[in-house]
Image 1 (cartoon, rainbow, N blue to C red):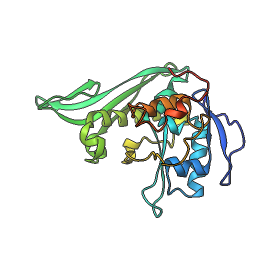
Image 2 (cartoon, rainbow, N blue to C red; image 1 turned 45 degrees about the vertical axis):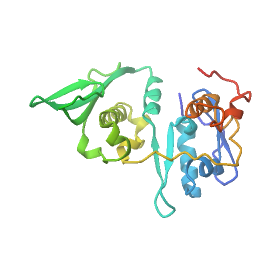
Image 3 (cartoon, one colour; image 1 turned 45 degrees about the horizontal axis):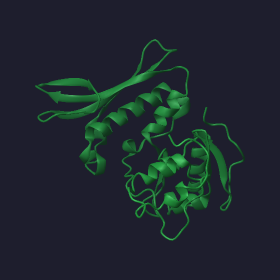
Image 4 (spheres, one colour; image 1 turned 90 degrees about the vertical axis):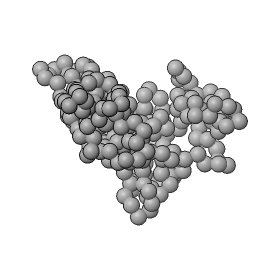
Length: 245
């Protein structure tokens, strides 16, 4: 189960923390957070973000957690990817799956359907989700309105069904597992724009495999189909251990 610390938390800049995430070692320092994730983060925000990742076993280089700050005068926002929520839930023996979908207005009535598809002439009005636990007699149910979360930008414009379904599912998971997910929010809930939240720094070395696991390097490299475009090509050849599958 995620959450057991491997060593004392770094409290000063320049000190790195190593912890387990998805069975692999991840190393994070204040400098790593600023260089690759959030350049405007102050020392306190770096510390809190590292603590969040370490305690929960999140690997930010696998897009499991984000630290977002638009300028030095704003407060940083820490958010967690939807896949991190579902992976943590799957670690619980009591977890018994989920159902999730859309609330669509079609043919003069509301239609509750699974998945995230809506068709011409239909209007997406919300999302819903049920999370099941083996030690509960009834599922945890959440229903959310599209108008409450739709920011009319980025992915909300392109895929509103996918986005509102994620919000509903995260709500239900948080209700079902409050000790694990209480206080954690997905970017879709808080209006965070993740585009550009990861930085590729020209002229600087790629973090070693202890920072970016081989799975992370593989996932990032998929965005660069040719070797000439791939800034991680050299790092992917370094021995790091672990399974790439």
